[in-house]
Image 1 (cartoon, rainbow, N blue to C red):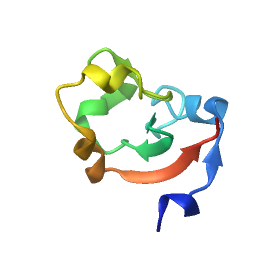
Image 2: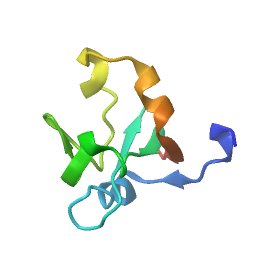
Image 3: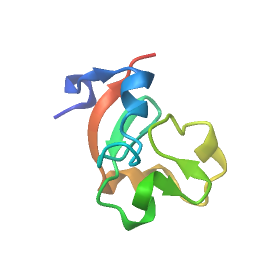
Image 4: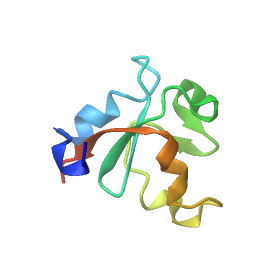
Length: 81
């Protein structure tokens, strides 16, 4: 599946996948939404100072890891801008 085949989700829909209200934990990076539910580093929807259910593109510019970290997570959608 290519990224163009993924469904679009709004920021409001993404916000519901924050690991708090529902068990799914999603984050967006560079307009792609990833399911990080199975990651022990995103337990309860928080990873260090970052919260799930939102676009983390700007926040991750200073992260100690590169974009390759997202390769282990399933892309589930695209962020509707």
